[in-house]
Length: 117
Image 1: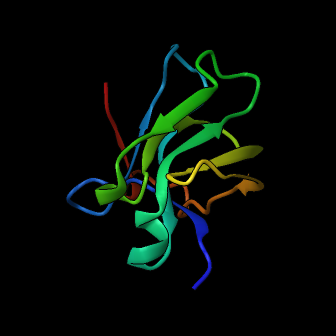
Image 2 (image 1 turned 135 degrees about the vertical axis):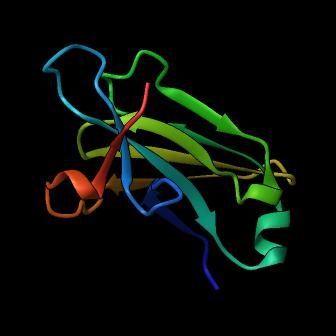
């Protein structure tokens, strides 16, 4: 199996998409988890993964050193975007790939969403 970047929209215990609004009447920001999918030997060969987010993020570079969580990170975003992913292996190799972060949201009715602070 080849390593693949994956993502999902985070939902609450009732299956509703969670979101934040940083300003009254501002855009809804959704919690998105991003991680690597691969077999155990592939994941064990990785030292860390650096996710380089869109330039609009204040903290663009997010590094995960957690192989037990498949090098997962969690972000809040209102949009989709192209990002770079840098894989740093234990043997000092580095791979870089492009990943287009996109996600699907359910129909915009209150029962499908839950606002958090």
